[in-house]
Image 1 (cartoon, rainbow, N blue to C red):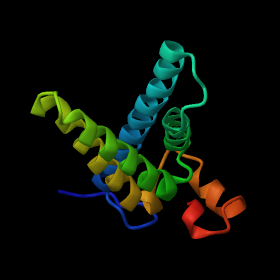
Image 2: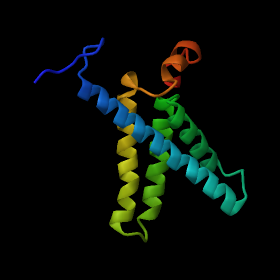
Image 3: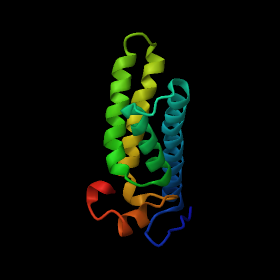
Image 4: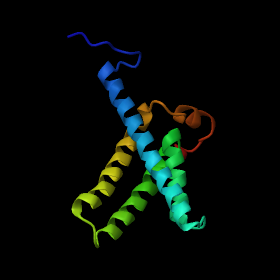
Length: 133
């Protein structure tokens, strides 16, 4: 079977994996943005720090910027939500938090190969320090 290679010596299936990870990044970003808007409309309170963290994490994930920073903050936020949920939810419901944390770290380690984002522009023009990648 003949595999086509791109300029960076990746097969077409390798590139498909990066597009799947990009789709997961969009979905995860949309989830965080939904949390932000849902909490905002339910409680009418803009002062809650966790709500603002969700907004920043969601926007950064959708755009593909600040991935390293939001992975750390998002993992901590999700771990705290998971620990809080252990008191009364079923294991199936609490397992979602762990899946999101793992997905965040997959996105983190795949960041150099990121597609469908403005991450390359961000690294070149805005983020001079690596922790802002």
